[in-house]
Image 1 (cartoon, rainbow, N blue to C red):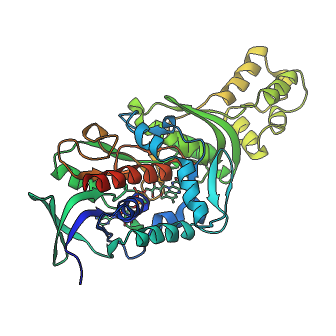
Image 2 (spheres, protein in one colour; image 1 turned 90 degrees about the horizontal axis):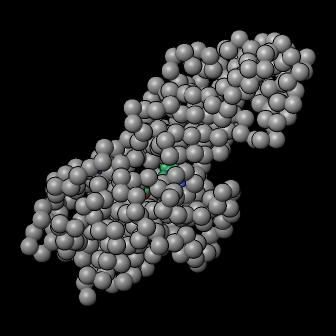
Image 3 (cartoon, rainbow, N blue to C red; image 1 turned 90 degrees about the vertical axis):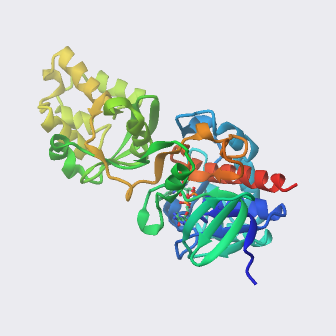
Length: 400
Ligand SMILES: Cc1cc2nc3c(=O)[nH]c(=O)nc-3n(C[C@H](O)[C@H](O)[C@H](O)COP(=O)(O)OP(=O)(O)OC[C@H]3O[C@@H](n4cnc5c(N)ncnc54)[C@H](O)[C@@H]3O)c2cc1C
């Protein structure tokens, strides 16, 4: 017979929800996980190109954006990348470091989903999936939760419904709406880790360079990244742009993005040394930059002449422009192309130790629904694991 009374009901069986359920269940709590989508852990399955960049060994609070930047510290310190790696190893999942501390499965992201499901089974977690929550009300003992025609009771309620990215695999604003129902503030959500669109002029100049990739130093506001920039038929993408999109979205009045396509000091010095060369400037640039980019750049800015025909000032200005290409995107490509959502439940109403709502006992918000957004590179999953762990431990401890 199905239980109708639980220590914890968790809405959202993604990365954070499954971690929280497994931790609380294995510590003796009676846990129910509810998800409205018909496939388990879809966002994990599509993550990291199908191999799930499940953590980053260099995780620090500085890798996260939030209006309350210290909020993530406690949870991250109590459940570290090493803790998650131990879990992965205990399930004999082979993994490798790709770059910059990013750990990926050797085989498939589905191994991480299966691992989390197995951990939930070890905690005797119950499931309702696919199932939709139709109402939630505060009761004397906790919360009354209606799921279809079932009336359920729970002491603790955990919201783990994630952000708004990629709605076709189950993302909804339900978590924000529930937070508002209980009087919590929301930091306005925006797509992040998302490609950016060129304005019409830049699109006319660079739109046909789709597929060209540049090593660049990209900055905006407090953010600065040295990674690849990819030109697309609509604008800019690639890791450096995805990273900087989060800072562009938080910046005031949409400040420009600064792109240095000559970030390598030795290559820059080499170009400067060729100041008196008789070679066409675009051919000189093509020694350090993709030829298609060098040619379009020189056409756009009327630089089609040999290097030695520039004045000193013009030569310096031409190199300076390549070191500070200022781009004012017309916008982002939106939630369907975004990896995460910036903003969410305002953490100033939450406990950084338990993830619980300060004013409402036993109501928790974890994972991406909260206003904590990681950089690209496994940080968002590490936040999901760490915040899920913090709430799972708190739920289990509150029973004793
Ligand atoms: C294409 C892509 C690739 C990514 N790759 C990486 C990566 O490699 N590394 C990394 O760290 N991060 C990556 N991310 C980000 C990462 O997937 C998320 O940050 C992470 O999954 C958030 O975990 P979560 O549990 O908070 O939310 P989710 O994993 O999104 O889970 C939320 C769950 O809630 C359910 N839900 C939503 N609304 C309701 C509702 N009303 N009722 C019931 N259930 C509901 C959803 O169906 C879903 O199962 C990627 C994201 C995308 C889109």
